[in-house]
Length: 258
Image 1 (cartoon, rainbow, N blue to C red):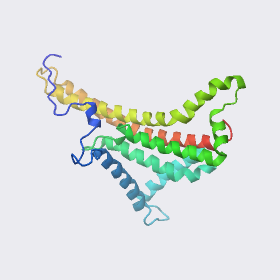
Image 2: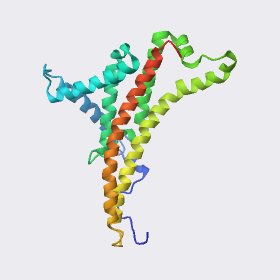
Image 3: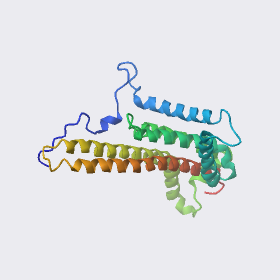
Image 4: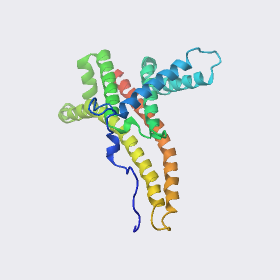
């Protein structure tokens, strides 16, 4: 397009995901991402403390929301996926769901508009926690050797095990945390970049030299609004999927069958 000049102060690029330290020369790791993570932790803790500070038989709105979230995770994920034993994992799963949901929502908050999960380090840590949990549960339930046998030795003819066992080790023990982390990271990263492209693209088009091109900026902004709604759905869905898969892996660790 001739005459279109992108005069925006901050064009979208991957540098957004590597922000400058808050205090230069002191702690290079202390960027806005750690602050957002701690803010999410504070929000989740304060919300449930406020919701249950004085529980009522007829719940208040805040108490009802808190009970609904916990009940959804406990019934809809922990018990449905793991079974009766899932109740003891419900607090972790509910905390995981709420934390991921809040951090995902940061990507839609004006002034923040960036989820820590758009940086691979944070989904990787969450995936590592889940990986440690379900392997610990499996070893504790069956013992190390039996757990490894249940996990990586499929019910197949002995002459096929030389091929199947390495595949099972790779997919079951090694790849699960990577796929957990990459799924969450990729969705948050892509969602942020799409919103930035459509939003800033609108300003680029609005400042175009050609008056015939400028009205297209309205279409770009309309797409940004539509994609914001889609990103809201993705934020909730990814929190649910991450929690659901964690519960599924815990269920597999408790199972007595491959």
